[in-house]
Image (cartoon, rainbow, N blue to C red; front, side, top):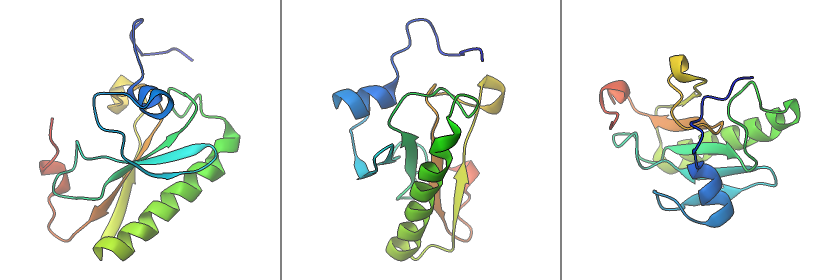
Length: 129
């Protein structure tokens, strides 16, 4: 597969997970053997509690993700969704994942957004850019 990351790209998730550094605070909710769940405070301010589920090893997108990570990723996504229902008494939970520029991927490390949903939350109108 073709990489879309710039030649000098320094992956923020790898910097967070492997070096404890980055532009955003390292706010790990849960570490699994192969997957991390971290708060996603940047994007969905009207949906507090949003998280990112991220493989601990670097894979650019879904095309690169080893099939063996499917189950660990889905387990972490499910656990995050259940925790959100319990913690926030939300009306639902959404997840999304993007690949390549045309798919609106903007961090070149595979990740899944998981966020609580509330009736009338206007999620897509509230994204910070």
